Length: 100
Image (cartoon, rainbow, N blue to C red; front, side, top):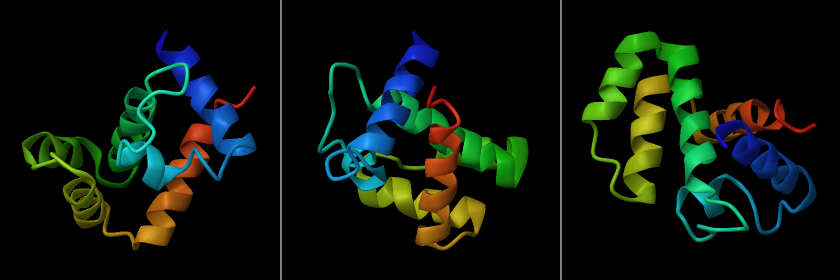
């Protein structure tokens, strides 16, 4: 189920970018598109944080306030030390690995 959701999000991200993108799924403006978009989107955030900051970054994420889009983004940028455009690009690349 997990990988299937990632594949669906990757396909949507590639072919339906007006509707499905970092902002729309992380903010949950698009919560459901035949599948729960939040799970694979969150998994990609976790993978990005792990890639840049390891276990310590994941612990920081677990302890952070991620109750809304602004807090999620602020936490992501603080932990990864990336500017938003670079973080979004990296997030997209992680998701698009599953486009098959």
